Image: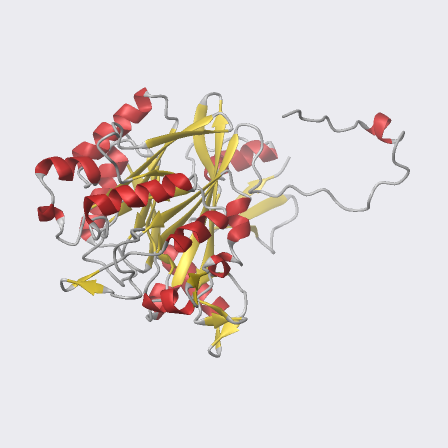
Length: 422
């Protein structure tokens, strides 16, 4: 498609007498050349209440669930969700039968999948504990329906699939995406050893290490790993020791970013120090994203946006943003919509209060990875002599009582540092 050039000031006067009066702004999560914006969310489920509230006669309509958040997906280069349900027409839907054989059962109508697609989400992570709810033919049918709608995906496979990951190129950046689960509701014995190796993607540190190595050899410049874990941390706001151990293993294997799911709760953000010294961001759990679960903790969720940029051939996550959300029973007659920070009230509870709780759980709202402020960087900007010892600042403000001729800076790490200005 042809790209038109903007007019220079000299050219513009030939066509425009007076330009509109506004100050130009740069919206941080609009990507430019050599940049890619990725949006990630957690688990999407169609439980009994979600199912029944979106059944109209004999037809379903789930699109309104995404009405207030779809702009985040549509404005991204890649939008990722974890699909924690099968899409199998011949099996009962969760809304009809939520337990089979004493185990929770997740299967949704095709319209649920179509609503996810209509929201702007275009990549699905598929490895989770409900993968075997409908058997191997249920996996094949689910993958067929996903492919029919044009989703890219990883985490579930057929005998024809050789690779256990997906590589997507966006704005000249090659991104490897991987999806693993530690738990399959003890349904693994229903498969032969060959079936277990073929269809599902069971986590092991050896498997992750091998997949990342293969993806790098294929040209991957950034590796994003989703992992369904935390059976020992469900409905909790802190990760378990097993989750921390696996996060370390994934970081040591060469991942660039780790996103957790399954716990039905938002859990903290952390930076894992890999064996080679690299800092690997990890959000231990994104929580449920589409849900009608009763508990308050399951109704808090978050949208993660990452900006990747290529610097001299090296891809870095230069910026991240967490958007806390809440899922009410009703909002403007819509059942269980995902509402972003600060929007609306429900059941006499201010949703923004839940959002603040979510932010506290995560531990950070926005981080600028590529532009960290350090003592040496500040001195360089101010034209001051560089200190022998460097120090990174997580927050920064100017002191109100600075003496004339000096700049006093206060950070969360050091109490006060004063430098003479030139």
